[in-house]
Image (cartoon, rainbow, N blue to C red; front, side, top):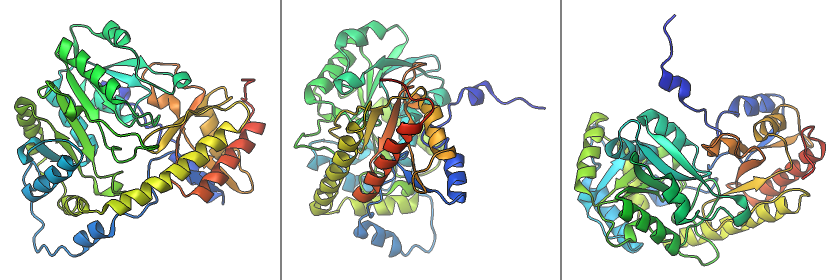
Length: 400
């Protein structure tokens, strides 16, 4: 029998999706499952964006330019200018979701065996992208005790070797919801400049900043024009995850031209995704004002609710729509599966993502879960109640 590749064997399962068979089985038994495992907003995609797709009269759905439609890229220039980022259309490469942008960035800037430093916990698929590209992730641990703040420059420099090619940050952060300050982003810029490293930034949650705190982009760093690669997506900004449309943005022409070769190899990004994305740029500010108000209420419901449960702790996130909670449990993978297989409270249960999958360091996150607060407040209250009741009877509960 032919053997599976070593890369395939090393490829990690998604902590967000690997428990889906257990949630499907729970639903088949009549259990209502509250999905706090995935960042799938229940907020409507802007009507103007949906109407643009519905009204598109395209007799032949042809390939687009490998960099994406010029009209879309010009429209994105307007958007980025509105948030303080100065770019041109020929510095934007439209991708099939932010995921493809990350793969293009990794493959364009790093060789197999090269190292990238990423504060952990981090978006689980970074591990998968690194395996796909043969890149080695060097994690630098941030901790729940200080709200997952950026580790010190000294800790970063301890990890830098001749093989180090890049640093990556997700801001606001998935899975922690931590919003890196301007000072912290400038510190990352100093490290990248000092050691001549690429600085990748995943800023797909830019709009989701709370409590009056402003987002500061890596694209605003002076003197780092040749180091910075920005990754972006319409998925979360416009609650349009299924259109699979993102972007790679950089002033570095060598990086852009190299990424273009990968883009040409996959031909072109999705036509209808670009149509929706272009129309979505005109979404009125009132849409986001309402969304932010809604998410603050959802965040407060989850954070205050979980912190009220004995033995639990979750820091207050300043961005995105996730938080990481520390629970009095022996093993988060076992607990999250048990919640779906063996537990229900009045015919309901809560699905969460084990935090182990958001760390690269083995043994980290075993008492933590990622919670996505993408559901309406009433559902979140019920989901937190299920968690509270589950912790009362979970056989692997610890005495924390």
